[in-house]
Length: 350
Image 1 (cartoon, one colour):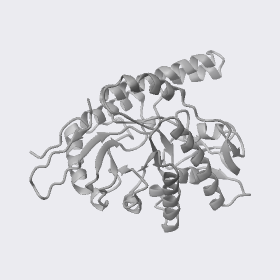
Image 2: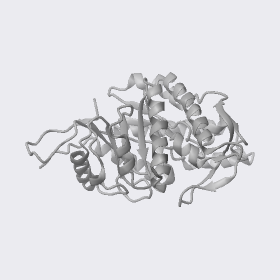
Image 3: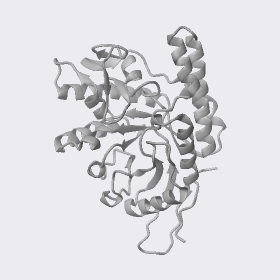
Image 4: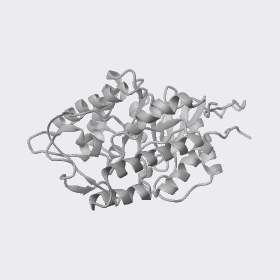
């Protein structure tokens, strides 16, 4: 059974309904209480590393079970950000950084209380070994053949532009050089993801709209994302903007046929300021991922109808606003279930 849903024309000339609606979950997987406890116990010598990885696999399985039951169409593959921060897996599996991620300075990104290890880029970046995501491999081999509806794995990576801006850089390298180093590193990452049979990838861009960067930086963002998409034709590349008004940034990509999907947090970006996107899947950030509150399904349904009419996208995919890592796992699960419910309810005009 396909959990996506076709919109039906109503005869009203002022109403446009996108051809299809789906639901998307992206970003870092919230940790369970059990995984947090075992992680601390390993550091104190009270548990084995094997105990940690068994719980990690159990967490991943539980997470995917919820996605499956909820009927989520586009699923996060949790690459390069499934542990303690956005940088860790990529830094640990690459060379060219001044120090290991555990030795990097701690910094707070944006005005949140979430702290990250900030790696320092010192030279050309390259891969030491592949990010062979074991839980995903288990899922592809055992789950995909058994399910009876279309599903899309969509690994989420911090965008290369945000990676460049949020990482530290050595005094020996210029900002332009850092951008180039990171783009080269990301090209290798996309090669790996493509080789591992993931047909989609989503870049999460929290930096550019938050700081409302100027035209030259926006041009660099377009060049970076567009070039990576063009060089990896087997992957359908998406770009999601969180933290801030993304209307100008969406407009920059509106006519870019190199990208498959575009999206943003519609609590921060006015729908009326967005361009039409007839050639893209639009990721409508309507479920608040920042706190434990839940809007009513009816309120989100109404927002989704307004979005579909305004954007006129090829497809609208309802999703959350910010990374669900930042709410307790139980609330993240409830938000995922809500996304699944909304993606399966017909949005016809009454």
